[in-house]
Amino acid sequence: MSLSGRVLHAETTTTTHIALFPSAGMGHLTPFLRLAAFLVHHHCQLTLITINPSVSLAESRFVSRFLSAFPQVAHVQFDLLPFDPSTAKSNDPFFIQFEAIRSSAHLLSPLLASLSPRLSALVYDVSLISSVIPVTESLHLPNYVFFTSSARMFSFFAYFPAIASSSGALDSALLGDALKIPGIAPIPRSSIPPWLLIPNSLFAHMFSEDSPKLTKVNGVLINTFKGLEPEALDALHSRKHNEPEFPPVFGVGPLVPLEFEKEDQYSPAISKWLDEQLDGSVVYVSFGSRTALSRDQIREVGEGLVKSGFRFLWVVKDKKVDKEEDEGVEEVVGKELMELIKEKGLVVKHWVDQGEILGHRAIGGFVNHCGWNSVIEAAWHGVKMLGWPQHGDQKINAEVVEESGLGMWVKSWGWGGVELVNGDEIGEKVREMMESQTLEVKAGRVREEARKAAEIGGIREKMFKELIGKMEQEK
Ligand code: UPG
Image (cartoon, rainbow, N blue to C red; front, side, top):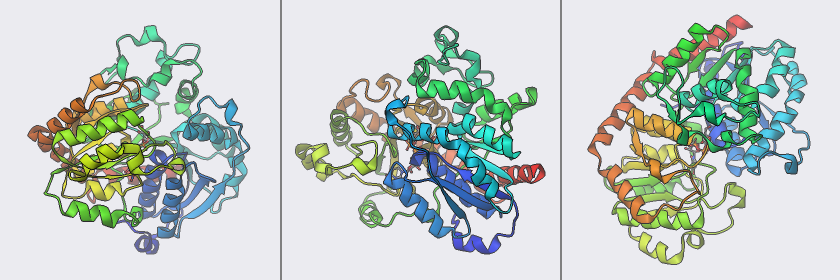
């Protein structure tokens, strides 16, 4: 599929004017800009509000590429109030930015009020609910949350108040061994994001403040589709049926990589290498845009890949924020290991065009942390996964990967950075995933479901039409 700004420009005739307000990090920005492209395709007029400066270089480059492909989208930069990072609840630069945006969000009022034609709706990141609602209420502006993770994770988020203690964190006693949310498979205690068990952590605070406010939200958008998450989507629809105050959920996925995302700096070298490999013979290894493994773990991964016996394309990340990456791939991986790797794989330490890689015929499997965008991209291409969740929502997403048949994950590896997983084990599991005919077939079925959802007249188009129809009625 190709959605390109120029072609769409001619089709744009609408007066449904939507402002989009993403938060920090590529995991949040990427699905937002894909959503934006689809809304343009459905003849909406858009204003994109971004924070300047962004935390990572990848974000600013992505916004530039989007804006040059879609000149019809208006762009407004939103200046944050000064925020003292020493007062933040987290020391993660992306999460500090979440907090900084939350504490400046009231300044959105005059900005949104000044947009012309009058806005039909604001679609904003899930991390901003409590701070945005007073703004949209004061402007009588319909507000829609874009939940950037899985529907299963959203079910958990929406259920949170029922199991939170007075400190805002999850109540251990209420949680038990597994969390039983009506309509979905229980979430084992070990899959619950650890931050949520810590009183006053940023996420415990955000979940306990924001989740009860879902009743004030006009709708929730999730980058998913029925063929991937039937159970969670059905449960959310039944919840809406039983509790009319609960917002309607729109499964607008799969939001897949689009033309404007093409990264041409490094793509030719990677494509050339992939072109030389046999069909389905290469393992692609990447842990998304913001997960840096420890040096020791990186070396174990390298050894494991060599031991797996498969060829591999491995994206190494040494720092959470790309601007801080200051060492070469050889320094990070180690000279000796690089020598061993040379014959077997391609190792890079820069941004890659993941959409293009996953779509290459040579890729036969994907080792990944189960960031939700990566899961959707793997589903789109039917590439089987070995999930290795590192933090946050990723174990809950890994459960979707396993349940849908898209891949497997190794529960005993635990959260990232807690225990060192050794190369032998990694090699063995990579081999198991790559050799699994069962996973191959099941991942192929998930791909078919994704393609079906994305057809003209398919469920994704239906969801967009319903969503925009609702926004038009609410104007
Ligand atoms: N990507 C590239 N090239 C790279 C690295 C990443 O194109 O070199 C893309 C990738 O294709 C994907 C996005 O960047 O579209 C990364 O998103 P995701 O796979 O979701 O991983 P994270 O960057 O880790 O995403 C954060 C959280 C994750 C969560 C997600 C959505 O870490 O846990 O599910 O946001 O909320």
